[in-house]
Length: 140
Image 1 (cartoon, rainbow, N blue to C red):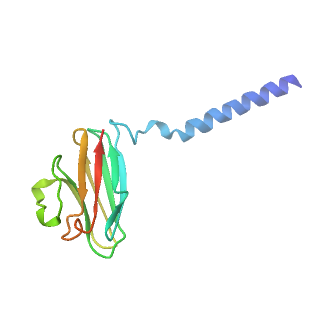
Image 2: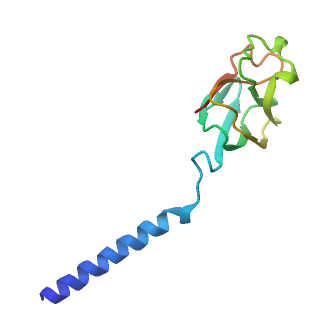
């Protein structure tokens, strides 16, 4: 009886190891500074969800902008130190990265996360920033 008990425990231990190995994803990295980060941001009138996101410096950031709104939206990361208070102050040379999505559509793009710090995110469609469509990108 004791021999069967040891065999069952060994089989269970092997099964647990196999399950944990299968769930580990085979070593792919979707988080750290050496791997890519995937962000899905939902845009509606007039907000981003999530509004605030965090990534690692030097990391490739793949962005999906899912526009659930009825008008076009953009997700624009401004260069460090640029803080717009109204959309009329925005100019394209202030942007570090932009992804656009037409109403009801999805837009995608990628960028390399800049140096550590905080960067403002806005929708540059006229009037949208003024309506509160903004967020923060924190780079660690």
